[in-house]
Length: 129
Image 1 (cartoon, helix red, strand yellow):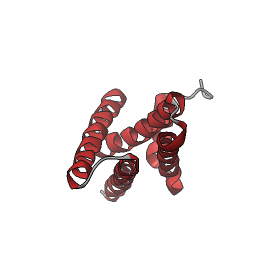
Image 2 (tube, one colour):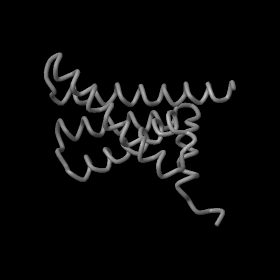
Image 3 (tube, one colour):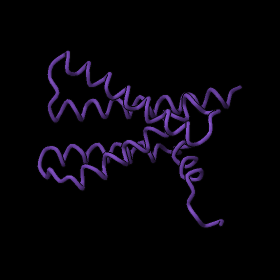
Image 4 (cartoon, one colour):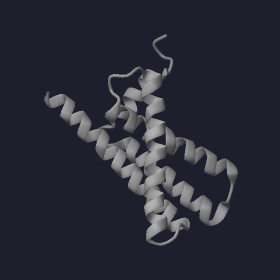
């Protein structure tokens, strides 16, 4: 099935992240989450944007740290690492000041940026070997 979209092809496309296309999509999801928290407060918009954010950044982190694992474990470890990183950065924001809509968005941006940078750094490191 040449035309079907499998998890492998989607993951390879996200992980390669040429021209930071998926990082921009992740930032767009963060903007949608911010707009939803600030005005719309729609569960549908929030769920879709959160799932997009979770999928993209979990694939980034899973590939950066667990490249040699199978697809399923790489994705699950990526989700676990993303959740841990969100909790840690959110905890730091809570300790420094308080978590409100703007700081939740800042936490999401920091985690998305760091996962994208880690993915690009590990990709370049693996190419140089």
